[in-house]
Length: 455
Image 1: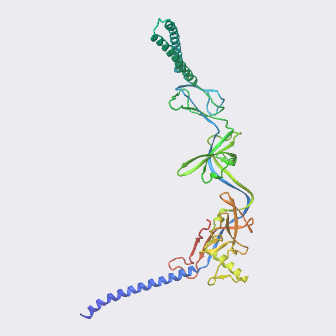
Image 2 (image 1 turned 90 degrees about the vertical axis):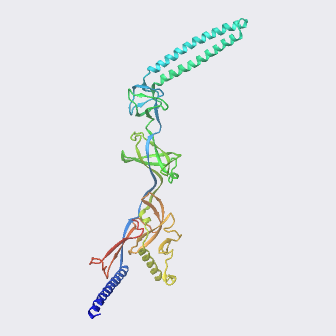
């Protein structure tokens, strides 16, 4: 093999090996630069921006909210027990009626004929009864004188009994026909107001299995009620005599009041949600409220006056790691300055005591109450704020009633106007080496929200 041929075989191999080594070196350099940049980012100084809410003083109410519809206390559906054509209607919507007042009439042509037929049948049966009674007396006298057989006597007695029974049946038929004729005149069963009128003159109504509704009459509308559906989780808070506040869309700026009259035992289940009906009595003397209006109801469970209260966002807030570290370091510095020999435990690592932290202790990277549950008991909470020096501080508060947006609080050191932390944003400003993969020449800026920051 000549030298030229050998050179042509070696050169491609050398060039390929050189290219691979060059690519590997470049990849390693980029990896080193990225590691240095991320290390520098982790050590960058972080700045926190807080969102505050203010402790206020005032009145607070605990309520259970729901909706319901206004209705009359008593409503009567007026129907008919006879079929026929409606000849006359004497009332209309919203008319005030009295008990026994005639409000409609049904055509009585066929009904009068039925009465006349029943009377004629009654007269015929009376004649039959008179004949049977006379025949019985005649046969009885002959039988007593032995001029008539016993069979003739029994037949005459049977005919008399049958005639008497027929008279009773005829009397019942006549009374039924007369009653049906009376039913053709529709009267109001109560004193009230006509809420619905479902028929017009000339309309045919058929009374078969169910009596058709002609009118709906509501009793005195000066007293009304609201049927409110209350969730099973809240029904235990509803009691008879409880004050109720409600609004209606027709008068959205006015507030009306009522009183719980009854909590019905019958439950209703809809889409696996169990509700109970609470009946709320309402005074409607001025007549502004109308049947069927939708009422937004609030049951007043408890009311307190002139108490400290704070928005619920402050109670939901949970500190991030930077806040907990800053508070722990400041407490350790205070303990060391006071000469506490127990400031460091377990290999020289600082450990905050529950007493120094207002009842909270370091636990697994987070903070928990001295009682062992995160956030304390159900009637206590930890409020985070900045002291006069701008340092992170925490204070224990006892919670009371809530209206859903604000909660009653009390405790040592809590004052009106106090600014409580409800959220925090951590701003990490990058210095030193810049991201080699970023086009940002002025430094990379990243921001993130703290976990559970109350937003």
